[in-house]
Image (tube, rainbow, N blue to C red; front, side):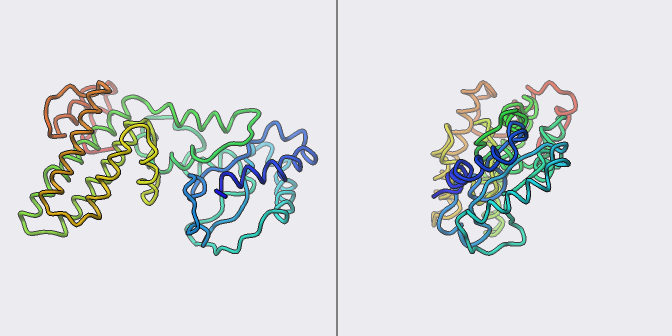
Length: 307
């Protein structure tokens, strides 16, 4: 059973009855679900995932004011409840950790993003890692009567400023051009196969982010990007070409052809979304076309590769 499914089952069978019985006045102000770091929060957990930081549970998100009044009692009640959960003996990792238990809403967002909620300025939108945003909007909320926690998640999912998105798209386009369309071949001509491999990796990294941005989504942490990419409404087919660039034993000309095909798909989608009308198979002019659409003076003044 997937972690999200198990968390929902545990909440319905054990958590909700306990909260309704012991904290009836508090339950309408709580949010309960599963979200954050870890493959189970993305729905990507499998048998391999069970070897560390893996156990059944859910998170109860609470306001700071309610935490001061109810936090200790609620934490004790949850720990007692855990005795009824299926036991898992997986090891704990230093960089992992569970997302289960009691968590103050502001603390959850601060831990992942560095600020206690949705971004409040373009700098926070532009410079916060995309995988951090992915971690706070993934998973599932099983109950949130007051809607505060879900409202923040919805704002993060849908309210990235247009000019920030354009700046990110421009940065991805120019880096795709530099790394894949230009430097990959030049590194080979310099007899630098290691540098050529790094250029390919950079092309793949920026292309993945580009595809997610074109879908108005956030790219997750690198080890889940291909799996998440294959679930996107647009561009899922690009994942196979990108994976072949990294793992396929192809001649350089075949890899150059793959880069050209991927770049052409991106350019076509930029045109379909009316983000670039440039007629060029090189991505750099499209990057400058994206920059030209930015209205915010400070964002437009940033270096094209920034963001």
